[in-house]
Length: 217
Picture: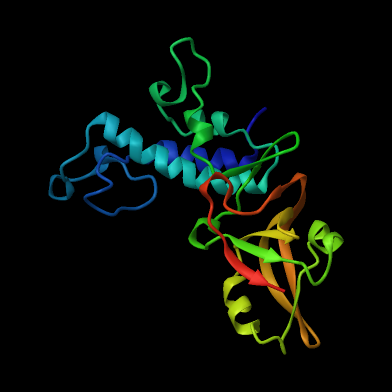
């Protein structure tokens, strides 16, 4: 499937930029060493190291596109960015899996759900919904009362772009990314950027090595 116009523009810009001297200087978008005067020239990277820089740039941009567009194809995007075949493909020409592995995602029914851009900067939060019931955990109905003794503590941990798991009786029933805490009278309600009920509830300890910051409701 063709890339949408935004993805195509981003890929074209990444492909056009000369990344070979990226560690040694800053320059405008679309920089090319062929246009440099002798006074501006610096040392440059070998081709394989230049490709690694371009791939890292591609991955960061692709994370945003994959989260925003459910039809986004990261392999097509990487190709359009000019990522070498040696990184993208196996010897038989099929995708190697390297490109997909560079994006943060969650396994859900029917495939992958990509992580919210910027969420890696915040620790994952485990929200214990025992006071509100299992249905609230499934639906993501999270609210904090400002009179609660732990309100300031919880508010600080539920920042925008935080990945949160809603639990009841020690089991995870929902997952999502916090957009904001919105005040409703004496309550603060979680507004989700995205939220989904998990296909199969799981014990919320530290699956896959993930460690959580606790929010007790």
